[in-house]
Each structure stands twice: as structure tokens, then as C-alpha cells.
Image (cartoon, rainbow, N blue to C red; front, side, top):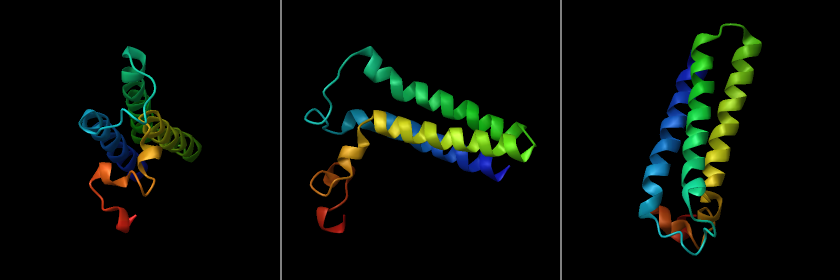
Length: 103
């Protein structure tokens, strides 16, 4: 139950970041454009949500661990797809509203 709740919070965070991304100026970081580039983070959100729901409905420990792991991988893939790994560099961290001296 806790795994599913944590997974759903992570999916909600990923969805929020996908919605906030258009407000960030990532033109210099993102090389691809088009419907496929726009839809991929949302596909990872859906994949993560399905895995998180599996965490809430499955009881065997092995199923919980696999679903939790897949949720984590979906979150990381979604964040990677939005090119947020490049924003975490100290010279770009200001795009997230964090001062570079705090990075």
C-alpha cells in the first residue's frame, strides 16, 4: 500500500513537471520537436500510473517489488525524456528557480 502511494506521488510529480516544462526555456537543450517528443513523457506517465496501480492491487511481495521498480524506472525515463537531466547542471539550475550557488 505504501509502495503504491509513493509511486502515485511520483507519477503526479512527473505529470506536474511535464505540464510545467513548456514554461521553461529549454530550446537550447532540446533538439527534437514534434508530436512524438511531446507525447513520450505522457506515455511514461501512463506507464508509471499502471505500475503504481499494480502496487496498490497486488499482494505478493515479488509483484510489489517488480511493480515498484517499474514505476521508478518509468519516472526516471519520463524525467530523462523531458531533458531535465541537463537542467540539473549548476549553470542551468536557474531554470527550475534555484540559485546556481545553491546547486
